[in-house]
Image 1 (spheres, helix red, strand yellow):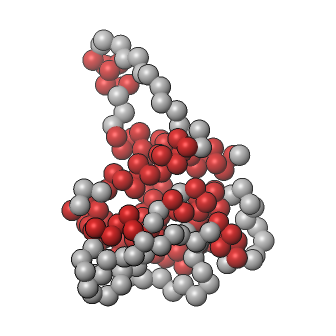
Image 2 (cartoon, one colour):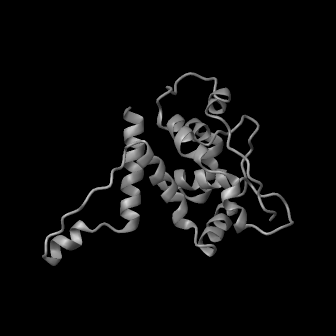
Length: 177
């Protein structure tokens, strides 16, 4: 696939332009996710993962945002693509226009393979953590660990557990505020 060009994501207002139906309030997690998470990604961030030439890829920033939603909702690739078509909250969170028709779920598999091959898989979640820290939702703190092995094992969360907890805190706090 061809290298994506750097282009800023849609403005926050674009999610509202394409969702005229009532029912989803302005402070809903999907609108906040669009504003603070999806808009923080840029196609240019992922350009080095693609080769020159070939057909133009589906926006890597869109796939990154979709991967975050997929992780949050524990959705399979096929469910994630279906959700971009069927669920209003996902459409708002990803700034999807009314003319969007979806894509083959294997695109997500290839995107994750590219992330892994280029050592960039953690970058998606680090971006979310950075946004959360910027909003004051996640704070650095010193963790006191007891000397016993049992307490030390319980106190030390794995990286995936820490990321999952941070995403949960971000979504819950943004939704509550």
